[in-house]
Amino acid sequence: AQSVTQLDSQVPVFEEAPVELRCNYSSSVSVYLFWYVQYPNQGLQLLLKYLSGSTLVKGINGFEAEFNKSQTSFHLRKPSVHISDTAEYFCAVTINDYKLSFGAGTTVTVRA
Amino acid sequence: DTGVSQDPRHKITKRGQNVTFRCDPISEHNRLYWYRQTLGQGPEFLTYFQNEAQLEKSRLLSDRFSAERPKGSFSTLEIQRTEQGDSAMYLCASSRDGTGVPQEAFFGQGTRLTVV
Image 1 (cartoon, rainbow over the protein chains, first blue to last red):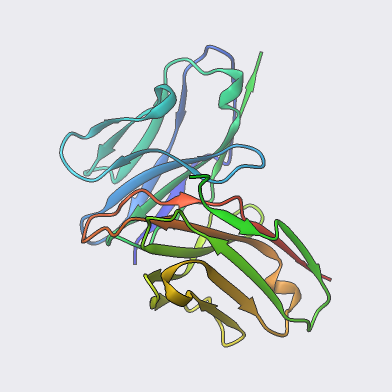
Image 2: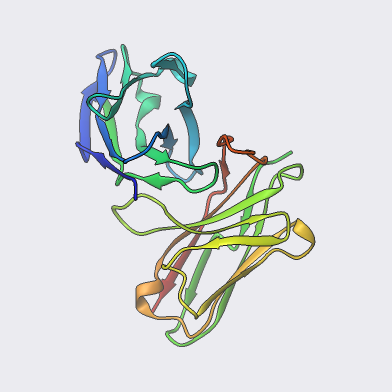
């Protein structure tokens, strides 16, 4: 079975600084990878996904992620964060088209 | 379309009572998913429907849990004889049919269940 490990449970960062959220996955077969964001009192929202092709994936709100098959990683980055990026971020993996396995989440707190 | 809606948003119940949650997916989506999220954890897959057919159930879904999606529209998740361990956020999501490639799943805001 596939699984996801998010290496940081909490990431504090100053406004306009870069941020990287680390995600490693485990699977014996090819995977599809996702990053979701959950703002307070809102549902999960898709930031970006890797299905195939280019390993550098660009998403909404200036986020991007790079799929690294040899390191089984899918780290999320943003070069300059805003206060509004304060949220919980979830990495997810699937080997099919219906069942996502999520990591435990990373809480990002952006400070002025 | 207003997205995926769930009702109620919060439910407090006494141990041993039955509860039922409702999910209204995005209208053109034929897939509907239920996940459970406990504090400090990511969502865990419970079950999913393709139209009205329930195609997979997680081992997390004990015999006390039942989900339905009559006519392939809204879905209900019922928990019988609730236990304190059932306390969690229950998330519903919907998507188009992936036909082998996962489509974007749109999530509702969830129903937070507290069993006292």
